[in-house]
Length: 297
Image (cartoon, rainbow, N blue to C red; front, side, top):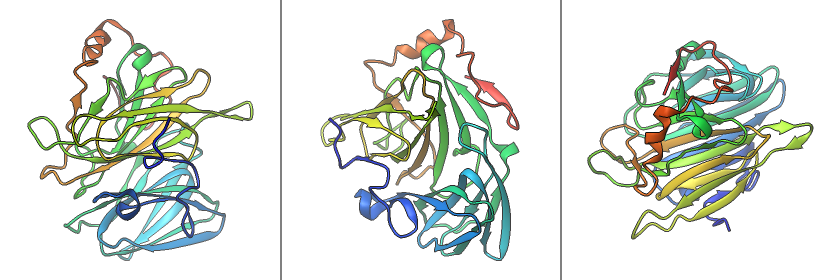
């Protein structure tokens, strides 16, 4: 059974104009935030960034983002399964306005930070699309806000798409200690599951304790709009059920001196990586190629 501290169903964290609103105060941690904004056609939304840096990422629809006297036009996309999206970065201590003539759903991924970087536009053409794993562990990663791709002070954010019937976030891994080869990062998973023949899809997410002091224990049936919080522990697999493709947005930040995604595999299952060399990547991937260069594994 899912621990309700860590599995938040769609709408449970709604606040003011946000369909989803997770911040350090509500999550019980120090760094990561996520807001999901449903903006009707012709409407606008203004927010203050406070002590956090933010990326405004269209999940569906298009918008303009104004910050520090600059306006960025985001072409966006029809859905998270239709293509990568451009995005806008907003620094701490700023006021941001989002305007959408056609309406849409927009993710605001945030992290508390110290340094104030310039407001910037991130083009879709600059988002590397990576194919990770092989066989039934094949998945696609859109590295729009990865540490090695886009400059930020603390924030790391990527998108993962898993074809129906596949497992991703596997082998289970963790990043809850500062040590050689591992960084300490809080993490948010935000899910959207494809709807097929008018039927909303489902998926499953597992998180298990990684040792003394770790009590994050989740086995959740997730639907579109659900969130899973991962303060610590082994996370994975993320399971896409047959017939329904799975998307999740990962938001990460932590206290480690280096902004880096450094993970440790669960030693009981790490051997699975060795089998990938003899298996092809799922032929259904990538979901879309343009406009990014595709790297296999």
